[in-house]
Length: 90
Image (cartoon, rainbow, N blue to C red; front, side):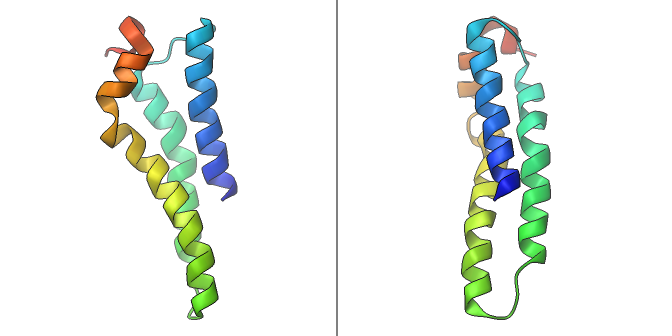
């Protein structure tokens, strides 16, 4: 969950920095910024799954948070480009 929080925090901080004019990332840069901690977090969550039902439930929350972060660039590519404006186009 910590890595998912870091990934979401980096994504939203990058978008805020863009809106304030501090940094103009491309959509690909935002994808990398968010995907690296999300991929590491998803792998770690899969590694923590044990045979007991409670471990599956605890790991499922972390898996959902990390996988949803990984899917943001895939599902919302056009929306990210719209949010980023002319600087976000490759």
